[in-house]
Amino acid sequence: MAGISATRNGRVRVLIVDDEPGLTELLAVAVTEAGWRPYPVADGHSALRVARGCAPHAVVLDGMLPDLDGVQVLRRLRYENPKLPVLMLTARDGLEHRIDGLSAGADDYVTKPFSLEEVVLRLRGLLRRSGVEETRSSADDGALVLGDLVYTEETREVHRDGTPIQLTAKEFELLGLLLSHPRQVLSKAQILDHVWSSSFDGGGNLVEVYISSLRRKIDKGRAPMIHTVRGLGYAIRAGEDGR
Image (cartoon, rainbow, N blue to C red; front, side):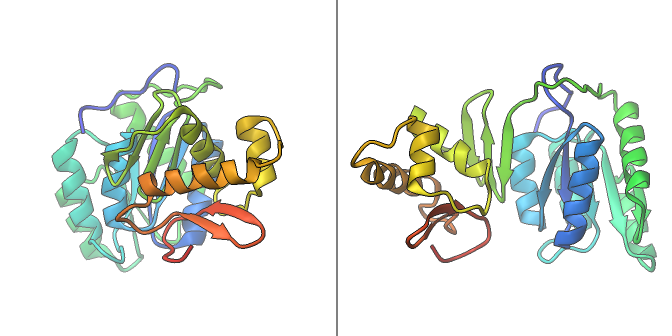
């Protein structure tokens, strides 16, 4: 990961790494309300993959993760980008983690439980000290992240697990529609209306063909993300094994 700087036509990107879904959601809301774009993940390996794809401007990193230790993740992030601002989250009794995190290169830390306002203030300070210019432009990089899948509308690039995936124009549009409605079931009619602007006879078969093609490219050799909900349509979800 090369050195990071904020672009004038994009929002500041904040990678949030925590395995507590409720807390992650609250942090993502706070980051969004601050005018930044959140990239929430639940484990260390996902954090490293997503970081390579989205090039975050700052990271909120829990010290206790289900796979890699937070300090391990921090050291790997630091190896790839020594100047990346990292705010560690620790438990009240996590003095050892706090010391290890600061020794490994964390820029700051907050202890749980904490206020969201405190996290935003500390992040703002880290971004300012690192020279990242915050922008509140309505335009952004159009990036969508789900698990290890990163979709960047501006550059029309798709990566999964850090590997680039080549899509046709319609496949790219279809994937963008699914990612814009994560975990939501979209019917064939809805997909036709949004991607092809039509509901002609045989359109259902067209959707099936493109879904199948997209699956081969996105899901092949990996945990499936594109799921069929019988009789209803299709949904994209991360971290599930069944279709």
